[in-house]
Length: 289
Image (cartoon, rainbow, N blue to C red; front, side):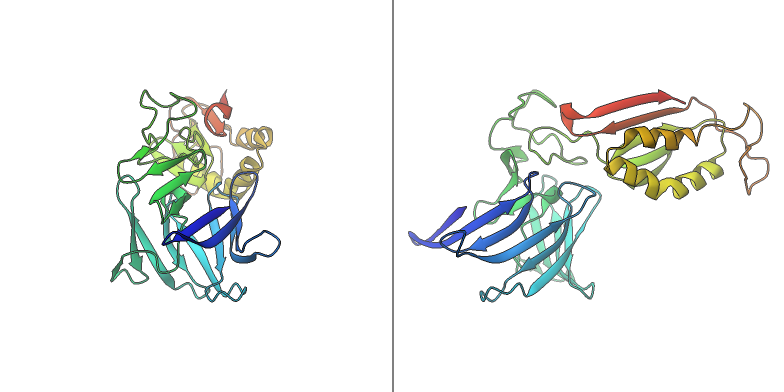
């Protein structure tokens, strides 16, 4: 529960209801949980722990959730826009290098002093408290002006010697406020080509199969692979990759059905590296195919 005061007098009692992953499902206003009414509700996706899909809000104070917006996030889970049911952007967001939010109207023609729709899920999908101007990274608050947490890391030195630094900036995330997420995305790396498939982390170095057929296999297996890893079914995912093992001899043409005649196999050793989880709880498997 959060108590807000105006001129020294209590003005609002806000009750928060969370999942076991500390995702805010509902916020209610009222003196007690039994009498409080829902002021907003959030629906979270399965792609990532802070993947905000839908937010409903009561804008009139009559107990009816009359406003619905859908969240759009970039590859680093920064909220970039809220859209309505007609896919019209109602508000957009930019960020400083350390995550300080800049609010804009839906057409990006006007910079706003603050969010007109009370948007709070912002930098890397974390809650931004308008009263303190701090992002709440579950375990500890983060100052997006200085790029520092305001308390020490509970794990002390998981990413470096500075226990206050935001080590996840600028290309990673830290949903728990303790250490950089190990598993960020799914991708199949073929030489210098990367195919993004989701938010788990996979890297595979291909050999003895032509690039065209690896590209085709990546597209065909995308949905299967993503579903398996999101359910933490690593063993079945490894069997899927086993289907992609080389079918030809070194130096020969590709044995797969190939639309480009004379394609030669890519050179190298086939490795599959699967890293699933966060920080020290991550499970990593390295398999030579």
